[in-house]
Length: 505
Image (cartoon, rainbow, N blue to C red):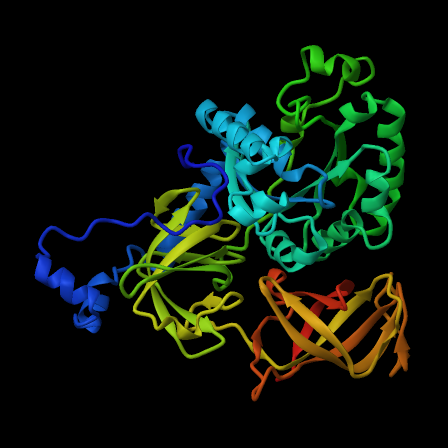
């Protein structure tokens, strides 16, 4: 994939190019004053498609077949309680794999020490904003990539602080697999795992968003003298919770690490690893990453790209980043933006810092768009083919699983609905039925309340914001799994997750 570039990139806009040589200074001045005929420039900027759709699918299949024989690509979200060491782990791993040079490492160490944050020097590789560095926490989702022997991995480093759960949801919705980082030091694992802790909530959220494989990295074991008993105690507490959350034991693995020291990330050797090697002879973290299996990609379905970030570029163009959930998109293709009546033409596509002619399901990409009025383009908008638009919903039915909540759900309950990078006010407008969790059969129709650990079919209605109610683009789970998953939160807690059954209007 791409050659090494700056580490800790927060989904940056594409590199700006110099103006064409044939434009003289007077034309540039007119352009700066917005006096150039924009319609002409838009027409000039919009490229033509290179492939007919059938030919494009053929190209994609060939590429995927070749990838299966080489390094398979997948996306990995890094999750866990605040201060578990997620960004430190990824910064150190990038360095060990050669994705961060010595000069950058030394600069981060020098500058973090100067700022009185020396213990955060590795984390500064991904926590790149001044506010993140000042507060010592991850706030946004940092996007990075690296190669192992068998995998090309896109990393989504998600924030662990409860305040930034919407950003974590956005990151997890773009991932195939998860790396859960827990803090083994005394009392710290417990505070992350108790009710309200992000270790617990992040696992539930990731599984609810379709992530089925998880590696649990038990970090900071050096702070408890690499104690085998402490490692086994944490594994014993997490295993039943992972099963209860829907993770199959065959798709779950545990590993002891020391991120700050770089122990058991790429290698487990040297003086720092001596105590760990007395009882551990298992795989390294990179060994486990090599065993992650990319899920199947639905390339024949209509393209669906929820927008996770927007970059306003120079001139009439604009760039967006997001994950291609299904289908394929190529340069020159026209896409519909929903909700709204806008369309755009794809001017260029960037994946892993490389310009590519097309992108397929499973990739996180940056799309530069032209011939578009950006007013209606927002985070959470979905790009799709004009001939196969995503349904817009104000009311829909969903099958939900209710988690551990304090106040039962009643008809009319006001909630916050999360769908990829979009969160909107909604209400549980009707309780249709409670269901048997195992079989899905109706247990009781029209129940009065829904309590914790129950399964139910409900009707959800989007609430108005201001003077109007705007529908959101989503799809029944049967039509598109990734577009059919929802999360429901209330008063800062995730209370339910589910799948869309039918869009009513």
